[in-house]
Amino acid sequence: MELVIDKVEKKYKDTWAVESFSAELTEGVYALLGPNGSGKTTLMRMIADVLKPTSGRILLNGTDISLLDEKYRDVLGYLPQEFGLYTHFTAERFLNYFASLKGLDNQQTKEKVSEVLKLVHLEDSRKKKIKTFSGGMKRRLGIAQAMLNDPLILVVDEPTAGLDPKERIRFRNLLSDISDERIVLLSTHIVSDIESIAKEVFIMEKGKLKEKSNLDRLLVGMEGKVWKVLIDQDELDNVQRLYKVGNIQRKEHKIEVRVISDQQPYPYAEEIPPTLEDVYLYHFYEEGLEDV
Image (cartoon, rainbow, N blue to C red; front, top):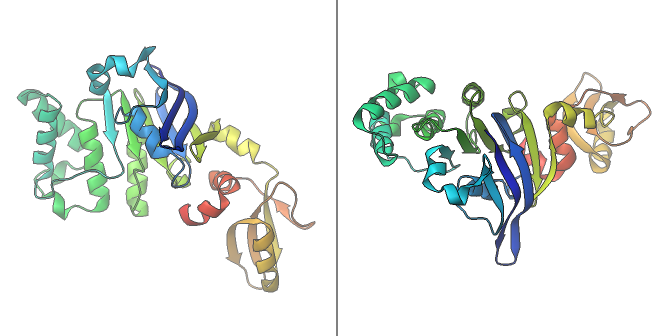
């Protein structure tokens, strides 16, 4: 299976939300990484066939999805960042309702609802009303509805926004588990969500694809750009003014600062291994202060 995004663009009046984005996806997890406003959601809505591109094509196994129409939506699962929940429904009733919208018959509905509830670890909560669910449970229920038609392509926008660390880990592992035989595309501005699961990372900025690579190559590209510096308290303001600072840790008599810089910032700075968070800060330092 192959999903090809060929020079896709989206323009609103005089503003380009996405410009000439191209990529090729096969089975596995792919991540769109970038700050808010970088075009991630617009691109995902085009891939989910919710928005039509201004120009360019999206091809599934060589056929434009605009020609596939319903056949494409039959193999697609989509979870937007904001999705409606009937909070007075139980989880089971909610999924039964969506199964009917997807055209499943009664027997298929019974089997698939039980299957997806088990998949997202909500089988014990099937009779509980959604209004009693935590944020993480609601996101997992959203994935469950997206999985009812057993999609070959799963598009998930900001899946862990607002979740606590435990739920984020659970959700991340779930996406990894279901990616074996399908394409999973997720967008995020939280780098730890993708550090251990992404097959390839697409870094977006202002609607453009800034970099496309797997994690290993991204980290290799950051070698020689991440440093550990021990400084006195009165030096901190100057370091923050001159350099991108990823982390500040107070020691007994010194402050240890993680600095991202193309050159060694100080003669006594020690080079250290980079992380994906360093990659993000290297590209989006001002936005990254809020997002990582």
